[in-house]
Length: 127
Image (tube, rainbow, N blue to C red; front, top):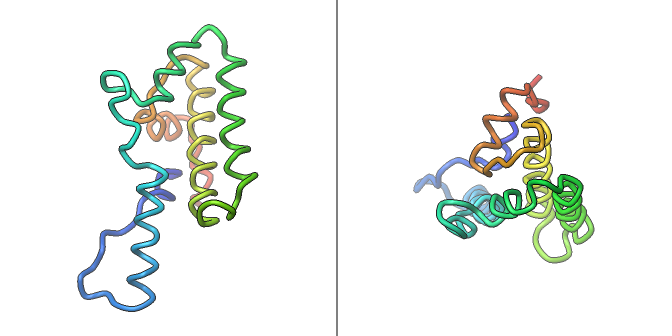
């Protein structure tokens, strides 16, 4: 499932060395990509959820805004944050776009994205 990309194992206290450092980096990337820093922007909605509702009658604007976010993270790939973090951020916006399109371009929430994609069988990472 697409959300598995942003899901990392919890830190194991017995881990040491490069494995521990890699896991810590992965957890930091997860927090940067799918952290709670946008939650509660207005009521229980994230900023993007509010934007989608504000411009619900302008799907071309919503589509463009999401495509700009995807392009932004690819354009700065590895220049600001790690390549993995930038790719995951672009993927997050691509997943939101795919879910919004699959839902018929009606307002959705970020928390609904995994379920919407699963219903649409967008499980392109499984074989």
